[in-house]
Length: 461
Image (tube, rainbow, N blue to C red):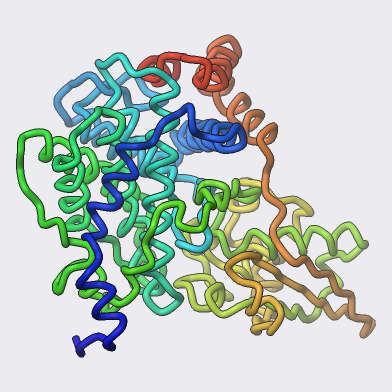
């Protein structure tokens, strides 16, 4: 890599290692200092995670994870939605994969990362067999979201995110720091865990082009790596304190070492978990607003059979992310869940945004509309991203009329919405009584509930 410009070089070389700063922040995280909205948001993220896990359990990758788990030695940590308990690392892998199984997990747009499906499986696995109070779980999770998001913000742009999976890259770093906070590890141990996690950065974005399903397992790999990093640190193993920002560290490996000087938790006084949103559609982040705009068109009276052309206004990261600009064919559910064209077409045909949109991938009406959909960059949406994710759709009808709808941002699911989604999924998998108990237990964490008992409430055969 070429030498850094003078000021950037001085900033990087003279600052304490990023891992030192991140470790100090994680260790200092206290529940009592968290504003009420932050506590509520973290609890909502945990609610969303459990709901995603339970809904994904019957899907093909959910069944594959269950089969994989059955091959592993027993341990203290539950695989949510099953009757199996494994060692901490394998349970984190299984639960992380399940949490990612719907492609509806929580989303941090500026880091292009799904932090909850790495942070929560890591913390729940490490909590197994220990007495962990709910407030400590929440404080550790907020630290994990903050750290993963800050590193992801600094590292990723549209170019890198098109090749390297952000969740697999930064998830383990945030989750490892959170795990160290949960278990009360020392500064040196936490720095080591963060360093080991930086060495586990992985997940390539070839899957949309080849039809692979490894995307679901990226979160699981990161969660297992985070548990491994914490356990290694507990043995006294040493990892480079400069694994993130050093001359051959994570950022240098991607030609972005000059960006590390700006990684500072709460550096702007803003908690990154507040930038996380809960998806309305069980699909890629970049199809969320287009789905809602398509539904607006349906409410205006647009019927799919009369549409002869669809023009979509979006922004560059959405159009460049692997699989998002795809008009067909859709050989598998993942190709459909990534495609903006498919998402709009299915919404116009079905008049709804739901998992059932991805059941029949060969629907001629959906394929016809996807094939006549054109994507383009809108300057206003481009300028607003990543703070807002806008989308506009104009359809031309068979009588020549043009009908348009536009939203400046996605409308996220709210706290009540994720609670109801969990209750519905848990009632199906666990029964109504257990569903109510699980929702109540998560809601009660901030008042001192038992974190280790949560997974025990989600046991199913």
